Length: 258
Image (tube, rainbow, N blue to C red):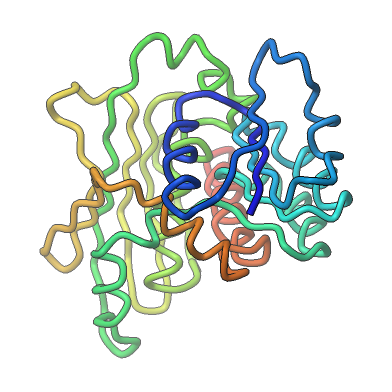
């Protein structure tokens, strides 16, 4: 499969490594200052798949345009910043988004063990360190990134829904540009969550404590390789599946504004 990549920022090396490890060929990779425009790139008839790693607020426009060119599209999370945009993308085949944590070994184990007739108390603590360069980039601008819930939290909200099912009740205790806390309840679970981007470097964690047992979703493995293995089989996280976590984050924001 032949790929073109739009965006050469922080996550770019993971995608390059994953594409090469699965036997793919990168034909073009454009970033800020490239001579080619992304609209030129997606029209290349020799490309099978467009990989979108641009700022979050550009994902919808680029994904939609690429899909209209009959390309396979793999877009980094979040697929869009608005659920109504995601619904538009649901009308097109071969669009996938990146939720690589679903391939973490803990997820496969938990998915097989969680039972509908049992109750689960979950403490989600996602505390990471982000330096001032991060906040000075587009990731520190809510209009570009969607804020920390879309930029950092979406992987973990996706895991919550994937493992335990839909949210029924939502309450948001606090939310700033760097820290958020709240509660999400489903049919058989209650999740107290905390997302922070201001943890010390030596105290970072990405954990779910489930009924007292801690699962750390930090990983040194490049889980993006599994995303590309799925892509080669025509599988992946579709807009319909991505919609769930996007709608959840919208509701968390709405709840805080009340």
